[in-house]
Image (tube, rainbow, N blue to C red; front, top):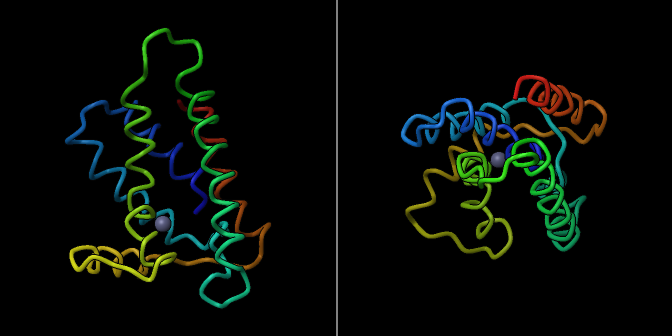
Amino acid sequence: MLSISHTLTGAFIATKLPIPVVYFPLIMASHYIEDWIPHWDVGTGLSSGKRKKMTAIILEFGELFISVGLVYFFFQHGHTEIQWHAWIGAFIGLLPDFMEAPRNFLHWEPAFLKPINNLHALFHHSTPDILFGLAPQAITIAAIWLLR
Ligand SMILES: [Zn+2]
């Protein structure tokens, strides 16, 4: 899914259950479950060659920027103290994608990451249909906004 979906989900779980040993596995599981839902994201088309790597990288940086803004707006805005759990949760929400980035973009993969990246790939279902692929993410983000 989009980084926006993963970061907001991570921040949501971490702020609702603000105990790191509890939210770390839950957020990791949420990433795999969200990726299992057919979705569209900036990496869609990379494996088939329809999307260029450079385009995906540029879009990803833009999307990370938006993600930080939304985590701020959803979870930090209105608080004077830093909402650490929200920010840590957002980061954990992206961990599976960060661990896979060297393999996708540099053709380099440390051996210890191979099993976890293979697991990630096993769960990943994307669709080239942008509307169909964004709908479950829009619903997720709206639900987080309402329940946060
Ligand atoms: Zn992923």
